Image (cartoon, rainbow, N blue to C red; front, side, top):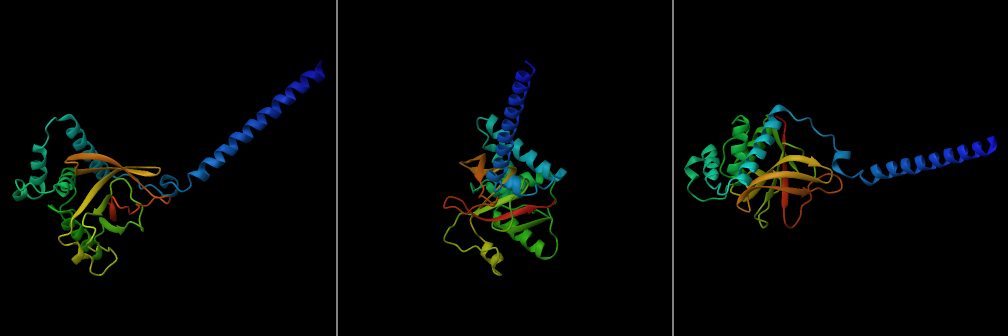
Length: 231
């Protein structure tokens, strides 16, 4: 009887060891499969109070648009925050939205100036970084993986050259048709971004990242730059 009990205990122990082996193998396989996902490869930057506020304001605006049946009057408020004279011009307002968020979040104007077009504040940030004032900094999409609090920017005129590495980049920016979104969260494989004038609303989107955690350049979204937020 004792030998039989020992055999039962031995079989149970062997079964437990086999199950643990399978489980550990699954755990080993999991990180290997996800090794290319951004949260595993990229050290996430801690959120500063300013970055948290930018994200909070972006989400507050998204909630406002979801809860209000006709929130079009809000666009006028965005324009008044950046360029009051343009409020009644019925122009694309995605840059006004970004400027409004930065203004409400308390970002200093010398860092992020009021602007009615994306190229205006991007040119300012680019120039400031070249003079050593790097509260914000422009990167090519291949050089920097975007994180929460950053901006991701795409060109809308696909025929116009726009090369962030070119010595003529500032000249290329002037008058260019662009769209920038605010990154409000980063998850494995994709970003959550909030932007204005997306389907004529403030909208949230999920933007897929490549296997290394960088923005891919697609036919739909011609991403050309990430604005790193160091505030």
